[in-house]
Image 1 (cartoon, rainbow, N blue to C red):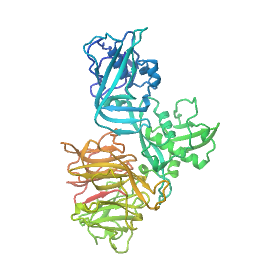
Image 2 (image 1 turned 60 degrees about the vertical axis):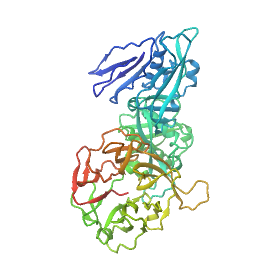
Image 3 (image 1 turned 90 degrees about the vertical axis):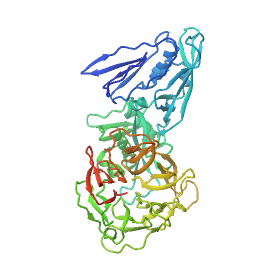
Image 4 (image 1 turned 180 degrees about the vertical axis):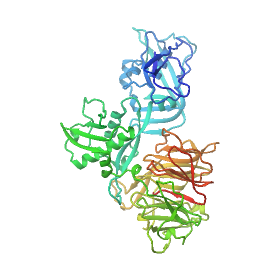
Length: 618
């Protein structure tokens, strides 16, 4: 009883626990470690969460053995929940037939700090009845819902699990299992991985071609349970509830994989054929290309082994699409490379460096903001790199100008009445439509403002009533439908991600009405956020501090989870940070050493000593 672990291990290997068999695959041979025995009675102290494993580790559940004790049934069931059993068939063997029919493991996954603690609701160690209860307990870290959407969670977890002994077979089985699936954090990290599926932004009109923006919608899928097929199914089901109001899918309603199809696997030419049901049979070529682009972006986020997708339905080929063709169908932030890195020099003028080089000699930008007529404290450059916005050194006024020679700075587009620079205008941010966002931090009149095309009268953006505190900084995602806000309340600050909606569905309102909805924390573990920037389609880089800790830098997902992969190299005294959604460009920071950059896989390198406020376009 228990489970098998198969694969490479790290950090000293897995520790054996009761009911668990560890198997190592090495040099083509499989060596089985012995199976530790379980006590037939006595206290059950909980199922330990497996230490963080190499992702190649495979875990196979073991069914209950004959005459297993109630404690073995409980442990075996909890172990089976953390296995690579595709349909939880082994876990169901620990349940009564009626409980198995009712149990819905895909409705939710509860992630605990450690494996669930197990306490029998009885005194002593004997099993003298045919009915027993156990209480599962722990500290919640997160939940994954039926849409596979991750949400940070906190507080205590307590669930009662009831067992009964069959009057004929005398075998213990669970007749009241916990809701969904429950496991420790390290088991969750080994079992699940985050993958972005892609939809298209609505209510946005991009100023450049192609006109459609791809929006990443991160979900968690089981790493070793046919993730490619599962991701296609998830994509076809539609976006998660949080993102749904601002995106669309090109797949016709009801589109699904063809029934009785095999698992999806690319061929030796890296082409994946996706057989769809008849709901998709009548789509035209343009619509099919959009569908294929959604699939291609989603699957490339999962694996690099898909270069082309072919869609079929109704017994015929609908379309094929290669990676290079997809970029002509839809724009995606992670592949829109910036031409320049921008920052302010010692004279507080806007200057720039070629983004993809090691150059350390900046040039003033063309136009009034590069001529030094106004000393600037912060800047933002439009995504097409034709316009720039600069906030004065005192934070009071914001100027907007073209990055082209000729013409004066002109009058400020916006003025704050705040008393100090910290209580005035934030660093601005341009969205994908060429509109400009900025926070006025005046305590007497705090506002989030939008200037259409950077020059129209400022529009006050409606924020949720639940927003407590003052917006300190603003960054809009390349897709134009998500916004990152650093919000300060008292001596604490947090990074919140909101959904941008233009107008209100079904209501007769001004077409220019803009609002931010459903703010959620992307940094639940941080007490203070110093700086942040988008660093991918669903990832941000953050400098901040945990309670009682020192400043650190890390990547975070928009859903509040921690992405896999290395963290940025340590950098002391971070004041500002900028990244591009295009992960090929280096991270750039402003610290006590001046402006520094971090090429992939390397250490921080000094760019200039006397520069401030580095930004990529956006």
